[in-house]
Length: 359
Image (cartoon, rainbow, N blue to C red; front, side, top):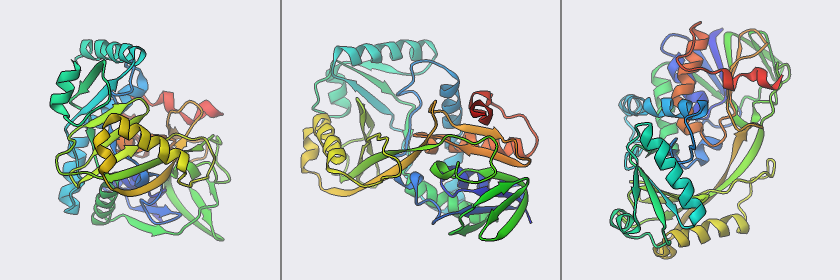
């Protein structure tokens, strides 16, 4: 018997297991190979400011998690010996229409008044920072505190850290049902004082969960290009598309957001839109080789907020529904779940994310 069983081996499940392993015996179960599903497909943007229109509760959750990232990365790289391609170069958000420029200016005003070191830039200033940008620009907003990470490297580092901390990981386990302090699979039962549901798009499939939660997959198509050294330094967001340059020489271009169930094919329409937007941001990328194309299924809830907290089943907790922000929210989610399991009030208000809102 373990103290804790974590169901789900993505960035959320692995981060929770790693943190709890400091004081508990932890077993992590994954239906496939750890870190090969949604988290493996992420772009790795750590950018709470770039889409925030106010300082609401969800922004505060994202901001609190980003504040944990420097220490999170330092510990992971020391414990695993792996480089996770963590970038602190910031993000440029570009506006090419009056409507999008007005949105940027509104964000600039509240973020500046709130004390964030954001800068409103003219087109010539953008060209100095990123000379290869060719899209027409009316206004641009630079957010120097935004960051990025290479998710696949991050997942490898968290997994190695889990091993170093004594987490037991079993793969190929399909959990069928949950009951008080017990999981059921393949005519087998296992017990633990605490059970964490962190299975992403599959989190609602177990029998016995109370409340049932509405999790649906949102497909994101994404691609990577081989980028010449130093071509782009910063993340760039334009409309619904973005660039994430990596020190490894990849330029990530993303992403679609499709409500098509569990269909996960790469499609001409999806890639066509990404490539069209990429060429609009910079015509130079038209000569860059395509390295890889892929999709991920993001776990979305009806209000697009995560589900964090106790269930009505004794000993069972939810940590799921992170939608497009799983990588960003991994450190704060691990902290919240650790507090809950150890009987403490979390450091941040989690009432907006309560499972009971779906009762």
